[in-house]
Image (cartoon, rainbow, N blue to C red):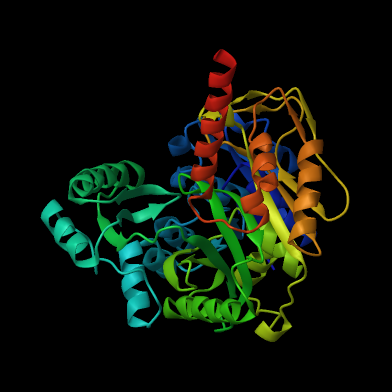
Length: 461
């Protein structure tokens, strides 16, 4: 086992990794930007090193500074968390060259999975169902129009090196496609340093289903069931749950087996997630593989009792999986709400600033992952997520009720958050009935806005 681990991240995921390390009796080193000097992960780690200014480019994406901190602290390994450098194959290679273990997959696997076009080709060769689309990068508008004519509208233009919902544009006709192609290229260049894009047939009203996998370096691969991540805004997940009401035992087993085949196809090891789109007929298609820990991993931890971060560390340290597929048990249902410092009533305007008071909910079958505290100042430089609330129940209805109770207890003052939106969604009839898709939130918000306008018009009249 490792003696000392550096966490190359911030916020709640850094706190999460520190806690797992402490339970494994591993010393931790936190890195922080000047804006995060008073962050919770800095307080909890055994050591902490400043790696640069507030900008991510100057700190959490600054590979030389992070490697220097790792060498100064004399660590055995680096855990990248999620986001930032977690799916950067160059960073993983540098860790290897410095004899520092990267707690994640091999650079080759990260590179293959991160190249969305190459990943599609790999899955196609392995007879894994993929969404119909281009076989490689689209080089110009004429080619885009030709491919769209072949598959029919609507289509989605996606960044080759995409992630986090960036670089995705949907077109419903030739005129819209030209603009979508150019816009997606520009966004891809700005976000990922490459303008390369590819095209897929756009699956309408799908569910976003992801399968959690564990793989060691001895060829053992298992899956830990699914998470339904269909409640999202602009491709950013807000609510995740497991199990999905759309999957029966047969479909769950089939999707799990396909996820394992994807992992084997790229010779994957460590924790990873294979993401699929599931249409209304029960057909599913490979979308991408995330070669890192997911924000929503606590949902899987709740229903399986498996600590995902500890598994990451054990596998990276050379350990074998302790479970076979037949030994994985799923108990009850779990749901997670991401709490963002945003104002839903003002088009989700980010709300950085000082938190005067905080009260986290407690009680049976409830977990809160966060890095905030009374007096903490939310910086304006990073992602707006400040907490995750995870509830577990004997079934979906109980998990929802526990979550609603928790959201009513949660207080973060005076910062505006997405708590009220989560309550409304969880109470909506369509969500309660499990009638959801990736367009659910967009439709729901449009309906609410229309209803509010009707009320205001009635008052004025």
